Length: 157
Image (cartoon, rainbow, N blue to C red; front, side, top):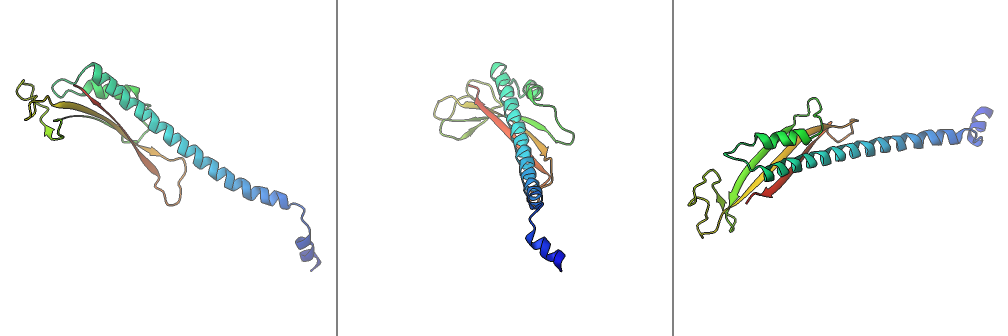
């Protein structure tokens, strides 16, 4: 009985217990912040790679739907892919008229590059890079990985 009363009134060592409880929470929050920061940094690297592909496309316009040089530029600028990241790089050319209607991009004759109102069609290129980023820890109510995707768009003419 005296031992129980001593435990209730004696406060020796209570700071160690409180510190252990708080440090566990702080450590978990810190790891979560680091994990989020690494995913955000990876997403910025993908954005830079998409922009590098777009810069390549602006200098060397895609001819006859050949996007291999653009895709190679994106892959060269992107960070090394992690195993199982499922990285995909796509380049898509599309055209539209000033009124927003879609136009065919595959034809190159002078009569086919104008819209019905006589204006020139606008050619756009989308360069997209996507991959799966695996999180450091498994968080409750979250999946084990995050899909990251970045797109760069530019008008070619």
